[in-house]
Image (cartoon, rainbow, N blue to C red; front, side, top):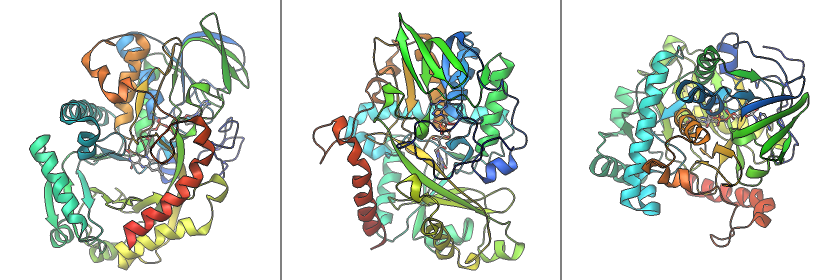
Length: 465
Ligand SMILES: Cc1cc2nc3c(=O)[nH]c(=O)nc-3n(C[C@H](O)[C@H](O)[C@H](O)COP(=O)(O)OP(=O)(O)OC[C@H]3O[C@@H](n4cnc5c(N)ncnc54)[C@H](O)[C@@H]3O)c2cc1C
């Protein structure tokens, strides 16, 4: 999987003019275990005219191209700056949740009222069912065990009890609350846990095998993917977008932006609309039978905890432990040892028999966070044939595949008058940041990282003290 250009661990979307052009993959466990990537159509080497360009080849971009071809007969061309699924889709925790964005269902009700929250729930759940269907068709190590939401302190059980009540009474799910003892006896001996909520909907996947599988499906329908071809900027002349890439100009009638947290400021419709936030992850060496017994690992069900700066973890199929959390604020500091230590300390705290265990893989990636922690699959300017699907806030493994389906409908102009497109994630824009919850303005964008750094300190205090 070597390319001519080395991976740049310090890449930062807010300060770089592009994410690279043909850079190597991040050294993730997924890259090491996905097998050979599907063949691509190589870099753009001359000017070309196309109907639809999809920018970005993560699970969002590839799903968009797949559904454009499969359901609308539109042959899109994918432009990818580096390698297929080079961004989050080759770096995630692979935890496919019945969720989109970071807000909980009770927060949906607070924000949008009961009626909208119920409709949103049906939409997200339909997306989850679609994800379930996709992973059953693609060999991607899928583990259908649900999601354990772990209370990291006794006081958090009241929060989980309320979440369980809301899910059951309002949305009709069948969640299961369990004590710390039940969690330890039935799933794993997590020493950090004061109890847990099992959401029965949740599928862990090998995210890169999944995205490669989606790409192969799309390629079988004629989709082309040009790697090492960053879209650097474009100008629109007589309704045609002239997209600049290092190897030539791609003229497209329609553009779908699927750049996740890697979108650059040169792409005007999304400039300053997304805050890229680093998340890091480690994978240990395979655990021995004795270590598995000492931690009482009885399942591969994935877990997250109730910290605002949450940890996500699971026992992978080959008995390695994966664990991740937030990382540094800027790319320049991403490889500082303190961020790795946050994860190794968490392993020791949650699973004391694994304290000091060898870490075989360590990597990080930029998550796309919107102004309200929820995604937007929209057309930012109704006069421009440009759409985007962005802002999953670290919860896009499952929903990105459905976002791609909806984005394809918007680009194709199909079903756009249906009720579902009135939901806030489809009919309200990505907004600029605000100050003290008041005025929104692009002028505040340069201060977002300062705010993020204060918030991290505050969240850490709330989570740990
Ligand atoms: C460490 C980590 C852990 C995560 N864990 C989970 C998890 O457990 N569960 C979950 O639901 N979500 C998780 N996520 C988020 C999840 O991975 C993503 O939401 C999901 O993969 C969808 O990604 P995407 O396709 O939107 O973007 P990406 O996969 O990031 O793809 C965007 C692509 O766009 C390309 N690109 C950017 N700019 C340009 C340009 N100008 N021209 C051409 N190409 C460009 C990039 O190179 C990149 O390949 C995690 C993310 C990270 C980083």
